[in-house]
Amino acid sequence: MSTPNASQLASEPEFSIKSILAPLLAIIIGMMMVILDSTVVNVAVPNLQEYFNSSLKTIQWTITGYTLALSAVIPLAGWMTDKFGAKRIFLITIALFTLGSILCALAQTPEQLVLFRIIQGVGGGMVSPIGMAMIFKMAPPNKRGAVMGMLGIPMLLAPAIGPILSGWLIGFASWHWIFLINLPIGIAALIVGNKFLPNLERQKAPALDILGMILAPIAFAMLAFGVSEGGTDWGSTRTLTGLIVGGSALILFIIVELLQKQPLLELRVFRSSDFTRSIILSWISQIALFGSMLMIPLYLQNVRGFSALESGLTTLPMAICSMIFMPISGKLFDKLGARPLALTGLSIITIALFSLSQIGTDTPIGLVMIPIGMMGAGMGLSMMPLNTHVLNSAPRRLVSRVTPLTSASQQVVTSFAIAGLTGYFSSQITVHMSETGASSNMLDNMSLAFGDTFFLSAGIAVAGVLLSIILRKPKLRDDHEQEEDAPDPAMMMGH
Figure (cartoon, rainbow, N blue to C red):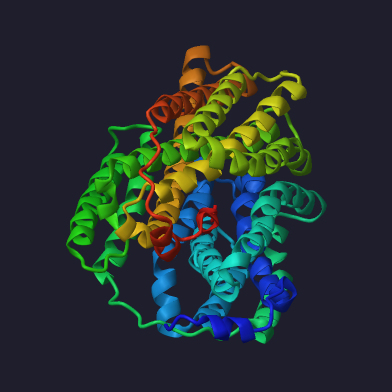
């Protein structure tokens, strides 16, 4: 693509955000719908258990399957847009997500719901990366910060609105409406997108890594299944089958990716010790945070008897504190780097999780909400600096391939966290029941199991605090190279 010269730039009219407001609106509607669905189901889990008369271990796959499907298609976003055009693929993924939402609302069994959530995930996984890439191309370099800042709105608002909207819909209608509400939103996104999204110039599509595409979902899904079953019994046939099949597929996937000239995920970047250290730290923070975020609504509804709406409102401090501290961390990152922010943020998360590990059946709700708010503050302080640090620490020649790798791996790690912690929680209920006897109070046993699960999460967060101490500032590449090769850090905020 040719670079415009100074006379061409001078003759072009001055850019204003108003000129791309309509396509920006289409992308924001689509992204908000997808991000909402990452949080609305957490509050609905107890209702889904009751409706389908199913166990937590089964219902958690409505979240695990969704996140695994997201991770499977994220690396394909670039290839699909090069091959078929960004506008066409964006509209197709919105349509697929909307169709998946309708099917979820019509599900008659938990297995159907898991399958339809996977369809949702396949559609939803590409919406954020394609939407961001389109806006990135439409906005001139000197305005990208302001435009990407507008795209940050759905990323911050959706997690705050999701639990409350979900609780309200379940309370006043039924769980089906947390999916049916996507129908009018999806139609609006399709109409606005079809009318206003530009047909951007396509690039030549690279060769597609078919073997990587097949092996990755097998590896990650089977490992997540093994981790989920392991929470109950690490020696069971189901656990060992999941771990052996998943582990074998993962080893094959790694070999295939290292031999490929154009791999699905660029694993060579792990040769950088700075990159490896920082991405492992981001994974640890994901595990500590997102597994726990599912446990909080379960505790509030199953132990404390809260309605879905009350549960959603109780978790609001997390979203508010995250919104307050995220812009603060962005400003401090330029001055301090990632290490002090990661250390502070993960320390706050650790203290919050240790506090939550002490909860009981009659803990004052204020003592539950304070740690929830602290978790949001810790997430706001650490998440964006860690994501940006991961980009900065990647070798220059590979930096443009880092975003799909980090986005997909974070979704996989989140699915492992949810599968592992729900399995551990279920096993701890059994342990406490056997210790206290069949006549014991079930709520007391559940409360103890929640405490154990939060304690485990706190232990994982401690590992993150210790690792953040040895984070080091990556060597600065020269500005011209960064401008040419580095993706925008906001592109990593998919979850």
